[in-house]
Amino acid sequence: MKKILIGSAIALTTFTVNKAKKTKQIINSLKVKITKLRVGSLALSMIKLSLDLTITNESSHDLGLTTFKLLKIKEIRFFNRKNNQFLATAFVDVHDLKINANDSLTLYNIPVELETKNVFENLSIFKGDLQENIKIVLILDTMGKQYELNTENFIS
Image 1 (cartoon, rainbow, N blue to C red):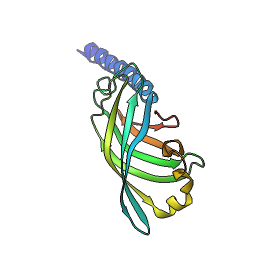
Image 2: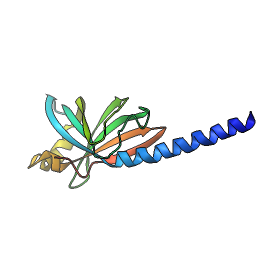
Image 3: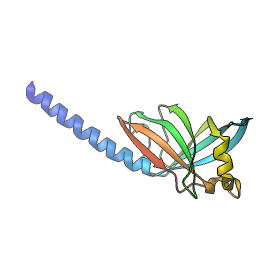
Image 4: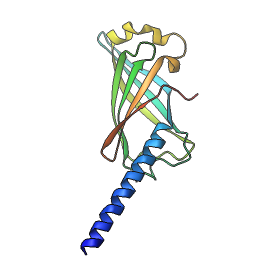
């Protein structure tokens, strides 16, 4: 009985390690873009926005099935791409994330609050293409580990 338990523990550990490696490879192939931006309210100290984000899995592996749906998005951070200045954080709790290989998933109506001060200090992000001027960082949690997906290369 002891040998069966030890063998099972080793097999489970090996399986979990391999699953974590594959998940990390898939996470590194994800691309993100803002697909819709709506202004909610404007105040002297805060601007409230709602946006839709599209996440594309450019790998040849399904995301979600291969992780037994243990992957979730905890935060989305926004930065000025030119000077890397922080703009805002959206706190989300997206569970059961599933994106098939070479497919996309859109997250709708994500609330974002920007301090007006940050907007004025970074007005340059609104010149030209917003996609090219904003860096988005997704904070992902899978199997108890956190990963930052830095979206320097946006999809079009």
